[in-house]
Length: 235
Image: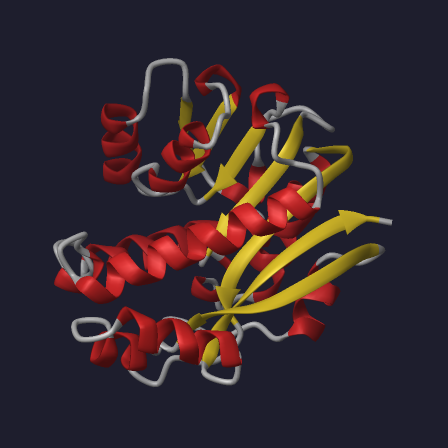
């Protein structure tokens, strides 16, 4: 077994262990006001950026999510107009793949596999996106492999959507923030636009049960935000 294969297998084992501990956490429940606020505000931001890039007509777009989990965002894109037959997800965790297949409409393709070695042909998707995947990968060579694969399967004129921490999370050592310069390193020869979004989770958890307006006002200031919503396009 060569070194890259060994590194990928080790990373898969680590990810399975980390995510197993998160199952059933109330902070990710739809009945948690903070989680509900953060998802709906992120939805608003994503739609605004898609609209600004003339990607509001999703019915004719082929879409891939890297690290799709249980398919939440795949279903959101379908809600926004994407055809289920044109939506694809891949995830490394078997149980999440099974859940995504159960929850997503028929026609959606859900694959079990590693995003560092995608099985799709070159220039196959109009939109490729990842939400909080890269911050969960500590190994730079693995991150570089995933980024190269995302670029490889992207059509000319297509977009990569990125949503991830740019700050470290002191309460979660398994997550490492990714600054702009690292995004630029991962996607060389690309144009990258970054938007600071998502109120810091501790602040959101504190305020959301009492005032969504307060959460919104702080998020508009941007200084209290912890994530980048980035649009990446090949030059």
